[in-house]
Image (cartoon, rainbow, N blue to C red; front, side):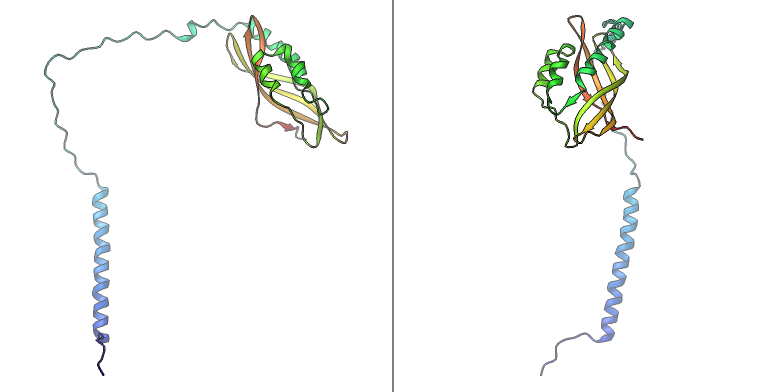
Length: 202
Protein backbone atom coordinates (compact mmCIF):
# COMPACT_ATOMS: atom_id res chain seq x y z
CA UNK A 1 0.00 0.00 0.00
CA UNK A 2 1.37 3.37 -0.99
CA UNK A 3 1.43 6.15 1.54
CA UNK A 4 0.11 9.53 0.57
CA UNK A 5 2.70 12.24 0.74
CA UNK A 6 2.05 14.23 3.91
CA UNK A 7 4.26 16.71 5.64
CA UNK A 8 5.52 15.71 9.03
CA UNK A 9 4.20 17.73 11.98
CA UNK A 10 7.52 19.47 12.45
CA UNK A 11 7.55 20.67 8.81
CA UNK A 12 3.96 21.92 9.13
CA UNK A 13 4.96 24.03 12.11
CA UNK A 14 7.91 25.61 10.27
CA UNK A 15 5.80 26.14 7.17
CA UNK A 16 3.11 27.95 9.24
CA UNK A 17 5.73 30.16 10.91
CA UNK A 18 7.22 31.17 7.55
CA UNK A 19 3.79 32.04 6.10
CA UNK A 20 2.91 34.02 9.26
CA UNK A 21 6.17 36.00 9.04
CA UNK A 22 5.52 36.76 5.37
CA UNK A 23 2.03 38.06 6.17
CA UNK A 24 3.39 40.26 8.98
CA UNK A 25 6.09 41.61 6.66
CA UNK A 26 3.50 42.42 3.97
CA UNK A 27 1.29 44.17 6.54
CA UNK A 28 4.16 46.29 7.89
CA UNK A 29 5.30 47.08 4.36
CA UNK A 30 1.84 48.27 3.37
CA UNK A 31 1.73 50.56 6.42
CA UNK A 32 4.99 52.24 5.46
CA UNK A 33 4.03 52.58 1.81
CA UNK A 34 0.67 54.11 2.91
CA UNK A 35 2.51 56.74 4.95
CA UNK A 36 4.67 57.62 2.01
CA UNK A 37 1.62 57.96 -0.22
CA UNK A 38 -0.06 60.24 2.34
CA UNK A 39 2.94 62.57 2.46
CA UNK A 40 2.78 65.29 -0.18
CA UNK A 41 5.27 64.85 -2.93
CA UNK A 42 7.45 67.73 -3.82
CA UNK A 43 6.27 69.17 -7.06
CA UNK A 44 8.48 70.88 -9.47
CA UNK A 45 7.21 74.23 -10.65
CA UNK A 46 5.78 74.09 -14.13
CA UNK A 47 7.81 75.67 -16.81
CA UNK A 48 6.70 79.21 -17.51
CA UNK A 49 6.26 80.02 -21.14
CA UNK A 50 6.63 83.63 -22.03
CA UNK A 51 4.45 84.88 -24.80
CA UNK A 52 6.20 86.91 -27.36
CA UNK A 53 4.42 89.82 -28.90
CA UNK A 54 1.75 92.27 -27.83
CA UNK A 55 -0.87 91.37 -25.28
CA UNK A 56 -4.17 93.20 -25.59
CA UNK A 57 -5.14 95.07 -22.44
CA UNK A 58 -8.86 95.29 -21.77
CA UNK A 59 -10.16 98.48 -20.28
CA UNK A 60 -12.12 98.18 -17.09
CA UNK A 61 -15.84 98.29 -17.78
CA UNK A 62 -17.87 100.75 -15.76
CA UNK A 63 -19.89 99.04 -13.06
CA UNK A 64 -23.58 98.83 -13.87
CA UNK A 65 -25.84 101.21 -12.03
CA UNK A 66 -27.79 99.71 -9.19
CA UNK A 67 -31.14 98.33 -10.22
CA UNK A 68 -32.80 100.19 -7.38
CA UNK A 69 -32.26 103.44 -9.25
CA UNK A 70 -34.31 102.10 -12.20
CA UNK A 71 -37.25 100.85 -10.15
CA UNK A 72 -39.38 103.46 -8.47
CA UNK A 73 -39.11 103.53 -4.68
CA UNK A 74 -41.90 102.03 -2.60
CA UNK A 75 -44.14 104.66 -1.09
CA UNK A 76 -46.14 104.59 2.10
CA UNK A 77 -49.28 105.15 0.01
CA UNK A 78 -48.52 102.03 -2.06
CA UNK A 79 -48.05 99.94 1.07
CA UNK A 80 -51.22 101.19 2.74
CA UNK A 81 -53.35 100.81 -0.41
CA UNK A 82 -52.07 97.24 -0.91
CA UNK A 83 -52.73 96.36 2.72
CA UNK A 84 -56.27 97.76 2.43
CA UNK A 85 -57.11 94.88 0.05
CA UNK A 86 -56.07 92.16 2.51
CA UNK A 87 -58.97 92.22 5.03
CA UNK A 88 -61.69 92.16 2.36
CA UNK A 89 -59.91 89.44 0.41
CA UNK A 90 -59.35 87.27 3.49
CA UNK A 91 -63.00 87.61 4.58
CA UNK A 92 -63.99 86.35 1.11
CA UNK A 93 -61.29 83.69 0.64
CA UNK A 94 -60.94 81.99 4.03
CA UNK A 95 -64.53 80.95 4.94
CA UNK A 96 -65.42 77.44 3.80
CA UNK A 97 -68.67 75.49 3.81
CA UNK A 98 -68.71 71.87 2.67
CA UNK A 99 -72.21 72.41 1.22
CA UNK A 100 -70.83 75.12 -1.13
CA UNK A 101 -67.09 74.32 -1.44
CA UNK A 102 -66.44 76.64 -4.41
CA UNK A 103 -68.32 79.72 -3.17
CA UNK A 104 -65.06 81.35 -2.04
CA UNK A 105 -63.90 81.67 -5.67
CA UNK A 106 -66.74 83.99 -6.67
CA UNK A 107 -66.57 85.89 -3.36
CA UNK A 108 -62.83 86.49 -3.94
CA UNK A 109 -63.14 87.57 -7.60
CA UNK A 110 -63.18 91.38 -6.98
CA UNK A 111 -59.90 91.15 -5.03
CA UNK A 112 -57.84 88.81 -7.25
CA UNK A 113 -56.14 88.96 -10.65
CA UNK A 114 -57.69 87.23 -13.65
CA UNK A 115 -54.90 84.64 -13.77
CA UNK A 116 -55.38 83.78 -10.09
CA UNK A 117 -59.15 83.56 -10.62
CA UNK A 118 -58.60 81.01 -13.42
CA UNK A 119 -56.25 79.06 -11.18
CA UNK A 120 -58.75 78.99 -8.30
CA UNK A 121 -61.60 78.05 -10.65
CA UNK A 122 -59.73 74.95 -11.78
CA UNK A 123 -58.95 73.90 -8.22
CA UNK A 124 -61.56 72.19 -6.07
CA UNK A 125 -61.27 73.12 -2.42
CA UNK A 126 -62.17 70.35 -0.01
CA UNK A 127 -62.78 70.15 3.68
CA UNK A 128 -61.75 67.28 5.88
CA UNK A 129 -63.83 64.37 7.10
CA UNK A 130 -64.25 66.06 10.46
CA UNK A 131 -64.53 69.74 9.41
CA UNK A 132 -67.68 70.88 7.69
CA UNK A 133 -67.24 74.64 7.99
CA UNK A 134 -64.55 77.27 8.59
CA UNK A 135 -65.38 80.83 9.65
CA UNK A 136 -63.06 83.84 9.48
CA UNK A 137 -62.46 85.52 12.87
CA UNK A 138 -59.54 87.93 12.50
CA UNK A 139 -56.22 88.34 10.67
CA UNK A 140 -52.80 89.87 11.18
CA UNK A 141 -50.15 90.40 8.54
CA UNK A 142 -46.56 91.46 8.30
CA UNK A 143 -44.72 92.58 5.15
CA UNK A 144 -42.28 90.00 3.81
CA UNK A 145 -41.08 91.80 0.67
CA UNK A 146 -42.22 95.16 -0.63
CA UNK A 147 -41.70 96.48 -4.14
CA UNK A 148 -43.41 99.23 -6.06
CA UNK A 149 -45.64 96.86 -8.08
CA UNK A 150 -45.43 93.65 -6.04
CA UNK A 151 -45.78 92.99 -2.32
CA UNK A 152 -45.54 89.78 -0.27
CA UNK A 153 -47.19 89.41 3.13
CA UNK A 154 -47.13 86.73 5.82
CA UNK A 155 -50.72 86.46 7.02
CA UNK A 156 -51.96 84.75 10.21
CA UNK A 157 -55.71 84.13 10.13
CA UNK A 158 -57.62 83.09 13.24
CA UNK A 159 -60.59 80.90 12.31
CA UNK A 160 -63.28 78.78 13.91
CA UNK A 161 -63.66 75.26 12.52
CA UNK A 162 -67.01 73.50 12.91
CA UNK A 163 -67.02 69.71 12.70
CA UNK A 164 -69.81 67.53 11.33
CA UNK A 165 -71.30 67.21 14.84
CA UNK A 166 -71.50 71.01 15.30
CA UNK A 167 -68.55 71.25 17.71
CA UNK A 168 -66.39 74.40 17.30
CA UNK A 169 -62.60 74.58 17.53
CA UNK A 170 -60.37 77.64 17.13
CA UNK A 171 -57.66 77.35 14.51
CA UNK A 172 -54.84 79.31 12.92
CA UNK A 173 -54.22 79.41 9.17
CA UNK A 174 -50.84 80.70 8.00
CA UNK A 175 -50.62 82.11 4.48
CA UNK A 176 -48.18 83.88 2.21
CA UNK A 177 -50.07 86.36 0.02
CA UNK A 178 -48.73 88.06 -3.11
CA UNK A 179 -50.32 91.37 -4.12
CA UNK A 180 -49.68 92.91 -7.54
CA UNK A 181 -50.64 96.27 -8.95
CA UNK A 182 -52.89 95.71 -11.98
CA UNK A 183 -54.15 98.77 -13.87
CA UNK A 184 -53.42 100.94 -10.83
CA UNK A 185 -55.29 98.67 -8.38
CA UNK A 186 -53.80 96.18 -5.93
CA UNK A 187 -55.03 92.61 -6.39
CA UNK A 188 -54.05 89.26 -4.92
CA UNK A 189 -52.07 87.20 -7.44
CA UNK A 190 -51.17 84.15 -5.35
CA UNK A 191 -51.76 82.54 -1.96
CA UNK A 192 -49.58 79.88 -0.39
CA UNK A 193 -49.85 77.99 2.88
CA UNK A 194 -47.03 78.42 5.38
CA UNK A 195 -46.00 75.54 7.67
CA UNK A 196 -47.67 75.47 11.07
CA UNK A 197 -51.33 75.87 10.10
CA UNK A 198 -53.76 74.03 12.33
CA UNK A 199 -55.39 74.19 15.71
CA UNK A 200 -54.36 76.92 18.14
CA UNK A 201 -52.30 75.35 20.94
CA UNK A 202 -53.96 75.52 24.36
